[in-house]
Image (cartoon, rainbow, N blue to C red):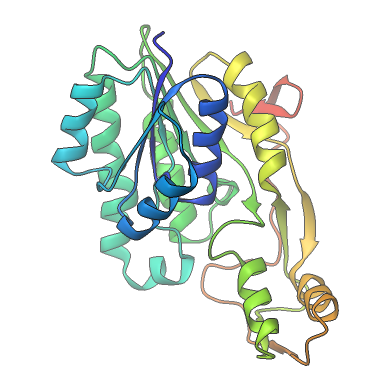
Length: 275
C-alpha cells in the first residue's frame, strides 16, 4: 500500500481525529467535507504537508472524480447527516443522502482498481433499530455484508455515541447551562452507551492493524450513562441556575439499548464480529 487514505466527513469529531491518527502514522490524508467554513478552520489548525482538505460533497461527481485522480488505498466513510429528529421528519432527503448516496460511493470503491480497503462508520443505533437513522445504517451494513470481494477489504464498524461529538447532548447541555437555560431530557430513566474520542481512537488503532477481513464489526467501548444524571452533573459542575425539563420520549427513541448481541463472535480484545 502507498499509505494514502481518503476520509469523508473529515470535519466531524470522528473524521478529524481519524485524520490526525493517520497523519501520525505517516499516511497522506485526503479529507473531504461539505462544510466549507469548517474546512477552513481545520486546514488552519493542522499544518502538515501530508494532508489535503477539500470542500466537496462526498457524493458529488467532483469528489468521485477526485478519487480517480488521487487514488487512495483506503477510503473511510465518516460523512453522515445524523439528527434523528430531522431524519424522521425529512425522510426522503435523509434516506437519499445516508443510504442511496453511500451505495453510490460503495459501488465507486468496488469498481476501482486502487482502493484496497473501505470502512463504513456505522452506529450502535443499527442494532435492533427503532428510528430511521438506525435503519439507514443497518441497510448500508446489509449492502456491505453481501459484498464478495477477494481483492478488497470491505468493512463496517459500530460504536456508541461519542461525548465530544459536535451536536451531542453533552455540548447541548453545556451551552444551555452556560446561559442558565432549561436542560431538556426526554425521560428521567433514559440511558445511552457513551464513550470518549480517545477510547474510540485507541480501539480503532487495534482494528486498523489487526482486523483485515470483510464484515460488520462492533467496538465494545464506553459505558451506560443516565442522561438525566449527566444533565444534573453539568448543572452542578458549571454552577448554573438551569433546571431540567422532562419533555417525553421522541418518536423512535427508547429508554436504553444494548450494543453487543449474544451471538456475536469476539475476534480481538473488545472487537466483535456480527454473524
